[in-house]
Length: 465
Image 1 (cartoon, rainbow, N blue to C red):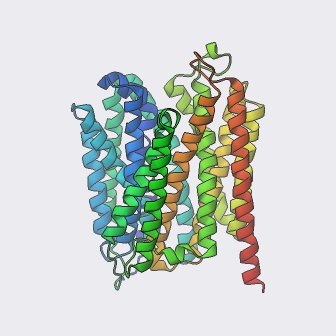
Image 2: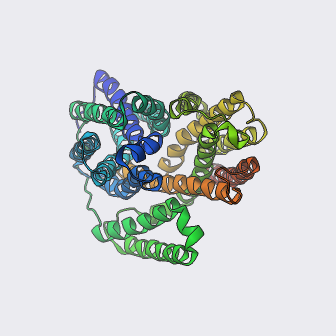
Image 3: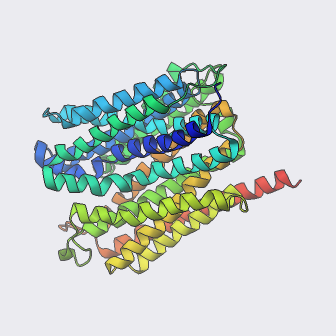
């Protein structure tokens, strides 16, 4: 492997950050544009919602496959080919084509979400160990706050120039990311090999499609409970079949035996439950801010102004990401996970108690961002402490699949609680439904905190027998 000079390493770091930020921001473009898409393409809001859902689905399916390819000798080619797919998808979202082609484009953009784990693999292979740990933490944080960066920009462009102008931003930045990767991405170290377990990939893709579909289709649960329950059982069976395939495969898509390591399993459990809570609060705050005054609460913010509410989330998330590597020298990663979960729980408590004025909503979003930033920055350290360098991309890609599923379930859970709190003939839920959802979120973060503390106790007993 060619040694990286100091100047090359200095250029590599911003390139990794930029690519991770772009793919996260572009995948989240569907969120602020749902209403604009419904109007521009003359489709229902439910259909327009799929511009977000399909990106999350394709990202969840592509992530483990890209993670395995990224562990092999063709990582640079994999990164460039994936970004080329994202650019092509971005072009489809801008062209004056029917709605179906917009969904195809959004699915192609979502594939880019699988690149985050590959950026971590590059950092771990080509940067000094002490430098790579800090960079990997920041990549993890950037992949979260990308939504906060893209949301207000996309909303502003949609108001000024329409939905295609907003998607045009995605085309420009993804093309820039492809050029950046072509100029800066190094080849993988020699001696790597990676074979994609096709059978495992197909079964996992089918299971994830079902899980995320069920999370996004809230009406299915309320109107066709038996069908939804049946599909949930099928999803569980498929996940079990996938685990058996992976255990028997000599070249598994995800090393299930490594995932069963107590530290990795505990971290993924914390990511799953914590992801549910984190996205639940994000959903609650943005929906509450846009609720019109006529409902008896809310602020009636426009899409663009509501997007500005995400600025404290992004800024404090980045601050937490920068602080975490320094704090890690004194506090173990599992304890940082626990502390960050407590901070997110505090965001829920703040939202439950002080959401009657906009300052309280901004404060809750800032607290959420700080907690999510710290949690995201600490998570890679827990997993990579017991993961070989060659398996970095694969191990982190599985964690991101877990995160995607948790986020989707958090969004669905928020919708279900608010729907249950909406009286007959009412368009908006009662204000008390938001309090109920916040209490559920506090419970989720309490479970996350306890799981993280259990990880910390285990690590302490291993280092101090």
